[in-house]
Amino acid sequence: MSVTAIPSKSLTSTPESRFVRLIASIATLGALAFGYDTGVISGALPFMSMAPDQGGLGLTPLTEGLVAASLIFGAAVGSFFSGHLAEVRGRRSALRIVATIFIIGALGTAYSPNVPAMVAMRFVLGMAVGGASAVVPMFIAEMAGPGRRARLVSQNELMIVSGQCIAYISNAVLAHYSDDSGIWRTMLAIAAAPAALLWLGLLFVPASPRWLARKNRLEEAREVLLKIRHSESQVDKELEEMSTEAEASSHQARWSDIAKERWVRVVLMIGVGLGFVAQFTGVNAFMYFTPAILRSTGLGTNAALTATIGNGVVAVIATLIGIWLIGRHGRRRMLTTGLIAVVASQLALGAVMTWMPHSALQSYLALACILSFLLFMQMLIAPVYWLMMSEMFPTRVRGLVTGLAVACQWVFNGVVSFLFPMLLDHFGGATFFVAAAINVGSLLFVMRIVPETRGKSLEEIEAHLRERYSDRAMA
Image (cartoon, rainbow, N blue to C red; front, side, top):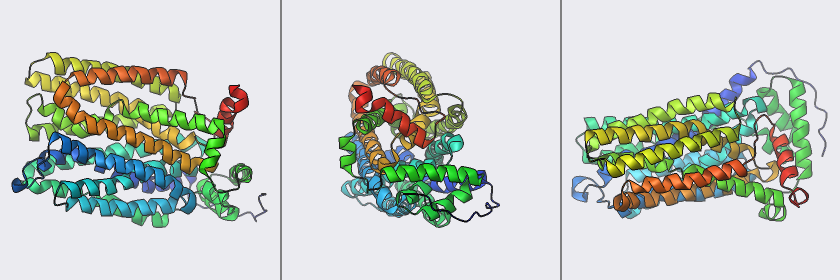
């Protein structure tokens, strides 16, 4: 396959940085919806746990776990299949389908009459969350150049935590000003708004040039690159790299491509391992169940919901700092530093929850430990995870492998979310000592196994990992 000569055109007057930022802002509306949907449940659960004659669904600790985890397992399914959908239909079309499912799921949960319906609709909503988690970072990474990739892909994490922060604030405001115990339905329905904006915004976003090149639509790929790069020489260089990669893997991506190449399997397992690292920090146990943790120290429901706003604010600030750091420090260094701080925060929280008597001081110290945990998690671990998911995998199977790796991450998330309410109920503060021990293992994994990808183009990362993990290199 060769790049045909195309008459030179003057570059668009829109600066590359401005147009790529616009594309990233529209695409990450999916991350905003993702964040809202994962954050809103923390405020809705206390009202959903009320008896049906009081406007709730009568949830128990078991059904609370099911309601929380059903979205997560739906996300695992959604991320898995969205990877294939992104390969066949393209990243942009996949995101439009995801936006439609977001709207259906958000309204479905808001009108659910009982627990089985709620679990089913949360599963549907989770499929959209999973689809967004797999496709949005991939799409942004393929639109951004190497110098902007880290910052723009990290915007995905910023929008996730911003969505969660909006959910916490919305929950607290609605709970404070409404006497209706069915207010949880309004909390859940709000999630349809960013999804609708995503669907409309995608009408103005071009297709991924790398996907177009993979489909041998080189003229279209060049037209897109002319809009998002500074110079024609840069366009020609990238298009040649894409063409060469597409020529080396011209057939439709298949699972057999993963099975027969050792280095791809190794990189996939590293991606799955990073998903374990990210989720078994316990981050989403804090994001979903902080009100329950604080209520166990004697804090009232409304006070616990208000205190949870701190989670969202700290997460947003930490992610902004993380976006700044990620362009200046290596991925491995950020992960190892973050995990050390996470372990320390969890040990402190376990001590506060286990050995201090119920009191206002215990509530404040528990919240301080949670906020410390979230600061380091969202600043040093979460942005790196999503960035590496967007850049580690080879172009020809990126959709499939990203979908599978992110699906595994959601399974890990679901396991933690399902078990946490019951573990907290039975073991109390000792739960956090177990989490700290798991994270020591994660730290060893990062230090020994995870590769460094900073400062390389997607094609350079692929060549480096192929050389490092091929059959010959591993022999």
